[in-house]
Image (tube, rainbow, N blue to C red; front, top):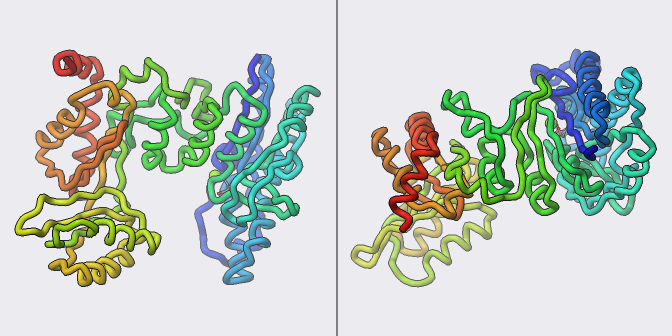
Length: 434
Ligand code: ASP
Ligand code: MG
C-alpha cells in the first residue's frame, strides 16, 4: 500500500477554450463542464484505491477557467487590485475540487473537497505570486485515515491574516509537491496529456523518445523543453524534500517518467535530453579596454536594472582591448541594449552590436560528471551538420551552444542523434578516461 498524491491539471479535467477576447458572449457563458473528463479522472483515482493505495488529490481549474476569470476581471477593471484578483482566481480550483468529489461519490469513493486554507496551506503575502510557507499535514492524514480521499484546491493558500493568495500561473504543480512533502507521500503523480518527459521536443526531432527516469537537476535544466510539463518551482521543491515525481498520461495506464534523486545508474546515461530555446538575443560590446573591473562594472550595472544575463564570452585581448558578448532574454533585449550603449560609452568601448536571430541548444545529463569527451562529441556532431557555434557555456551537467536560429532544428537533431546510442558513447569513455 502506497500513499500517493495525484495531481490533475486543467487538461485532464476540461477542454481548453479558444482563448477568445472578452465579449458579451464570453461573460455570459459559464465554463463548459466536460462531465466525462471528471468521470474519467474519478475512474483513475478509483483504480488506484482499488489496488489498495491511499490518495490525496489536488487539482487545477478545469479547461481555461483561469483565463476566463482573468478576462472577466479585465472587463471590469483595467488593473484589478491584486487581493481581489486572487479572491477570484482561487475560485477556479475550488469548483474543480467540489465537482471531482461529486464524481468520486458517484463511483462509490468517499471524497471531501478542501480549499487550500482549509488544509492549512500558509503562504507569504505576495498576491499573485505567493510562496508556500507551511501546510498542516495532520488534517489531510486524518481524512485519509478515515478512508476518504481529500481533494485539495491547487494554486492557492492564505496568509497568516487569512487573506487568500495564489501561487502564480501553473502553481498547482507546486501545491501537489508541497502536499506530498507534508503527508510524506511515496510518490507525487502528475496526470498530463503527454506520456512523460521526452529526450527532446518530438515536433523538432522525430527521434525523441520518452525518458524512463531522470534526476531533479536534469529535469530543472530541461524545464525549457518541458513547455509547461512541470512548474520548475515544483521540481525544486521536490528535490528539497526528496519527493519522487511521476509524470504520466491520463489517457492510458502505462508508466511515464520518474523524476527522482540522482543515483549511480543515472550516470550511465551521459546525455538525458537535449533542450533548446529561441528566447534569447545576443549583445556584444566591441573593443572594451582590457583592464580589471570592466566586466564587474558592465554586469553589475545590468544587474541593477534587473536584466538577467545567460551565456557570456570574452575574446582574447588585442591591442589592450577585447570584445564581451552575452545573451539576455528577448523580453529584456531593448532595455539591455539601451543600457549597454550608455555603459559602452562610459567605458570607452568602440560600440555595441546585437543579434536577435540566435538560438541556444543544450545537452543535459548527470552522466557528464563522470564521462569525458562529451563536449567534443557534441561539437563534432554540430560541425558535421555544418553548424557554426557562436558561443559555448558549460555547467557540471550541461553543455550549451549558441547558434543561428535558422540552424536550430538541424542542431537539435544532430546532437540528439549523436547521443542516442548510449552504448557507443560508453566506448568513448573507456578509451579516453584513463
Ligand atoms: N489554474 C492556474 C493556472 O491556470 C493554476 C494551474 O493551472 O496550475 O495558472
Ligand atoms: Mg494549469
